[in-house]
Image (cartoon, rainbow, N blue to C red; front, side, top):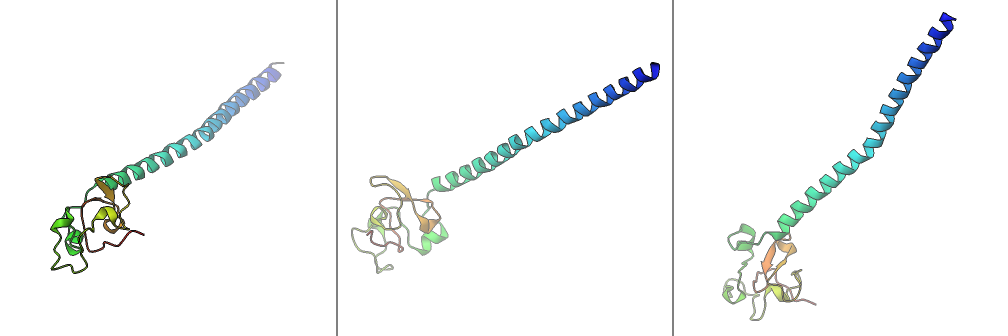
Length: 130
């Protein structure tokens, strides 16, 4: 009888250890999707903040790209001598490239990587809105 109890006791201890290991494995598996979701959502949030920060930046007239395209904050100050394609009445607000809403003072422009341009600004990339 002592041997039977010992054998049963050992089997019970092994069974308890096996159950504990099984529970740990199940907990780890249950945590994996949570980690994945956390990491993916953190990465997505970081990307969104980065693109939002880029979109909020305004084009500076001193920026090399802006200078090469003759960008000015006020279209009335555009250099008509240097940029022959400039005509009165042209401004970013009525340009095909301008992605701001009508009436917005600033709006994103794909020419400048989505940075904000003045509604009243102008550059040589201006093209008539269809």
